[in-house]
Image (cartoon, rainbow, N blue to C red; front, side, top):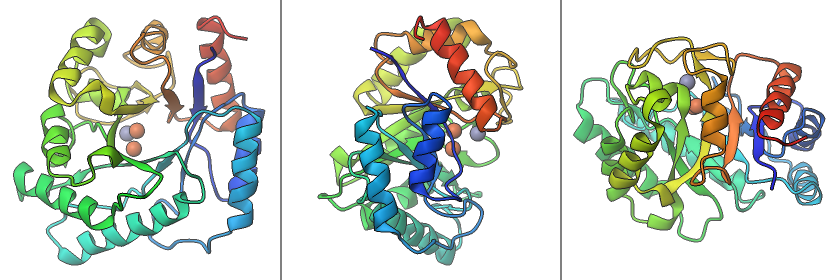
Length: 279
Ligand code: FE
Ligand code: FE
Ligand code: ZN
């Protein structure tokens, strides 16, 4: 079976259009923002547009999609108003995602800004418990982070601490980001199996639903979070082939967040498919 490979696409021209772009670049999954990533304002919902995309996805055998929460969201801000805004944005995005059932919604857990990891994790879980409804058709994913500043999610234990406090256990999972994990100090390049074993022990591989495939501009442990194109960073092309062909990972959606335009992502996808023996 072919891998599910895609890239982060712009939703500015609409959801159906995004599906068309995905087809054009050889993707069978993709990631998108439900709203302007740097602002909080949601666009008016267009159910017909979402329905057209849903049909396109079925017709072309797409794997699960990954929606990405806005970057400005911080569920563990010191400011109650900002925490409230995070909950509001996530609730709105999840309402939109009900029109695209069976997909994922990924978010950066947040930065505790000096409150401490424990308080941060509790605040993140509190937000999740306020917005996740047991009957919703979207699984919410915590992204593994680079551990920049007071960012939560650089350690698997932090993800575990959040998950432990979530009420709807079957609506919460994890999305790995290879650049972030390497930057956080996990030796993906040298010891992929050990890292996965550690993840399995601490979080559980059954929680892992998607992977952001990004090379890193910085060496392991740098905590910088600067993505590089596949093969142009410190992880290197052969690592990604190993990763994608790993028996525990190969069926997951792989999403590029590399510094590239749609055409460039298309070339990266083609290259990865060729290296995986697909056409
Ligand atoms: Fe992200
Ligand atoms: Fe990412
Ligand atoms: Zn990043």
